[in-house]
Length: 347
Length: 256
Image 1 (tube, helix red, strand yellow):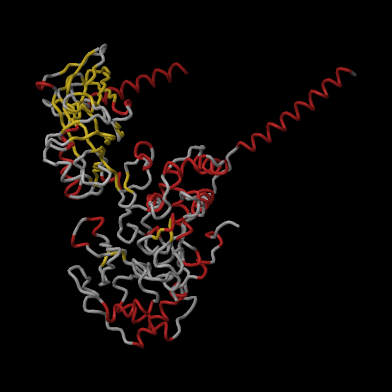
Image 2 (cartoon, chains in turn purple, green):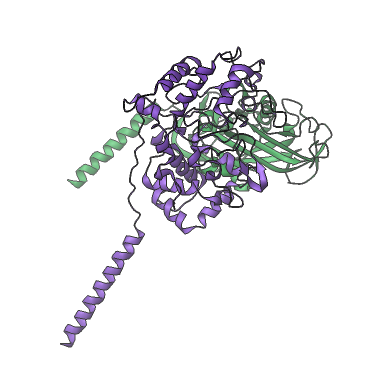
């Protein structure tokens, strides 16, 4: 009897131990990575970014998203990526020619919207960034933006148990370094695809243009599409569109990167997708309406040695054509994109 | 059965070794030699001491606070056969402030050499391939964030001849594409071009001096007064690259 009791107790203890072990194991186990699909929208070319070097997973995307919205990537905690890249403005800065940065400073260029970035070979208005993965380093260390050091950011992430767990899940162990942070951020940013505007629906045969939109599309194809090439609505080239130089900023554009006088005052052609959400316009945000930009091309182009041949004689657009053009450009607003919960800050 | 498959494996391995030997050049000894290569920053022949006052060829006073450079493709050369006799080293950041980053170990199966070659800088493909880790981690402070690309070498210090308000000079030399590229290949000969024969029971150390003065007066004359800083690729950066390409020499080869 006594022996039986001892055995029973032992069995219970053993069972309990095994149970505890099982629990522990479950806690330690890294959840399996769930692959995430990057879908190339119909009519789009293959993306520039090579996803095979950074396999997309739900967990990698979630980590990138957490980083994108985390103020700790900035010196004082106030300037996450999302402070200048707001979803409701197609990830541009809403209604600001320049964005606010650390210590009441302004940036010197207009924050571009973030969408279809996976198709960009060069980033920034001057194309100074040659790879999407290293882009976040620029705002993180810029004194007038996030004003932080790479080492400090990594140290802050390492201090956070939640991050350690997420990095471990995504990359196999708890090591946190700049490469891993940047690859995770890239998973989030590269997934920001905007290809569901009315224009896209028309292209898919799921909607039709109004008469004005159709007329505007005709004008667009003849007078704008050489630079704002479909389907990305940019050819990603650098051009001088004849904007007079801002005497305070004195921004020489692409020449700052190449050192080549032939690149003076050239800036990257921005996409016109979501153009009604990303105002103001121009590399320094000098135009407050799409109409003002069209008026620039109609009548205010300044000619210099590098002014683009396509605009140097100005572009003839009648008042009627301008109205139609505006109607067409409104069809490039992608409401599904700015309302997409996958890209919204976690509540 | 087990023993049988073991024999087959052995035979197969021998066969493989045989094949490999045939492909290699005849100088292979079949033995492995280890060679240490140590970079030693110097000024006027003496090891560099941070913050110690020096005078350059222009008579300008200066002190050094930082000196770092990327080393790769480190290999021993037999200039008679033109063949490399030792394996490569891929991108290591040599930092004068961190002693162990200045020494390298290469192994070779050939025992005669009379030259040493290496590259200062990071190849163009590795400047355009996104986020990197290890010695290429941007956190090392050798990566430009506003104009993607690695700083191949940097020299920082102070001088009363600097026109910058804080009296410092900062030469951050980079540029990887086209005519702005600052990657430099360096080939050094042994003293008096003597042929060195490695022995498998002796360790050889090659001491490579890097003369800081050459930054100011190497292939080109670049006074501190005329240029206190370089922070971007371009024609000036190229001149400094030519100068650092000329700063290295083999000071000694010792056998232990």
